[in-house]
Image (cartoon, rainbow, N blue to C red):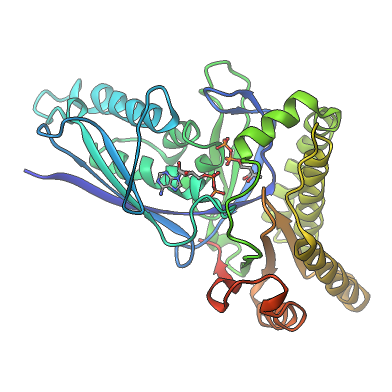
Length: 351
Ligand code: ADP
Ligand code: DP6
C-alpha cells in the first residue's frame, strides 16, 4: 500500500502588510494583515508527501535539492504538528486507521517560479506542504485550522490556505490558537481583480523578511504607531472596499499600506531599503496613470504594492490589464531592469 498525496498552493500578495512578530517561535504577528491569493496558473508550489515505515527519517527535497529538516525548525514543527493531528483526530478515533503518524515522510516540492527571490515562495511553499500532508493524513480540518500550522512555517503562508480575499487575524492568545486565516470573500465575489507581477529582480533578497521585521520591531518607533493607530482602521477599510467591490477605496488603502510598510523598513536601525530605482519609477507611473483616471472619472484604476524586495505587484481590474501592460512595456524596456521577457510579467487573476 502506497500512502501518498499531492497538493498545490498559490502565492498571496498582501494589501495590508504583516511586518513584525510578538512571538518568533509560534510566529504570532504584531498586526493583522489582508491579502489576495493569486490563481495557480502562474506562481505556485506543488508538493507530494509519502509516508512509509521503511523510510529512515523525514526528508524534504525542494526543487530537487534536499533541505535539512532540523528540529525545532519551521519544517520540523509543521510536520510534527500534522502528525499530532493525524494521531488525535484519525488514529485515536478509529483503531483500524493505519498508524501513518508513526511513519517517516518523504516530501518533494517544486516551485514554478524563482525560490527565495521576494516572490512569496515561502507562502505558497508552506501552504502546499501543509495541504499535502493534510491530504495524506486525511485530516478532517478546515482551512482555518490548517492555517494555524502553515503560520508556523512562514507567517504569510497561513493566508495561502484560502483562495480569494483573505485576512490573517493577529489574535490575542499566547498559544496562538486564535491567530489564523479567515476568508473575507471568495474569488467569485470579485473575479475581475487582476494582479500584474513585474519582476524587477529575482536575485536573493538582501535582508530576509524574518530578520528584517524583527529588527523593525526592536528599533522602529513608527512601527508602534502603525500597529496601534493605522492597521486596525485599514483592515476595516479594505474589508469594506472588498465587500463593496469599490476598487478606488481598495487601491487607496493598498498603496498607502505598501508605502507605510516601506517607511517602517526605512525607520529601522540600520535602515532597510527594499525598493530600487525601477520600483520607484513604477510607482511614479501608476501615480500618473491614476491622476489621469481621477481627472476623467474621479476614481483610481490601479494599485501598486511591494513586499520585501523590489518587485512590483499591480492590482487592477480586468478591463485595464492590457492598457497597463502596454504602458509598462513602453516605459520599462528590458534593458532598464527586467531580465528577460519570460520574467517580465506574471499576470494572474485572483485564485
Ligand atoms: P520568498 O520571498 O520567496 O518567500 P524567503 O527567503 O522568505 O523567500 O523564503 C524562502 C524559503 O521558503 C526557502 O528557502 C524554503 O525554506 C522555503 N520554501 C520555499 N518554497 C518552498 C516549498 N515549495 N516547500 C517548502 N518550503 C519552501
Ligand atoms: C512583506 O511571511 O516571509 O511579504 O513569518 O518570518 O516567514 P516569516 O515572514 P514572511 O513575511 C512576509 C512579509 C511581507 C508582507 C506580507 O506578506 O504580509
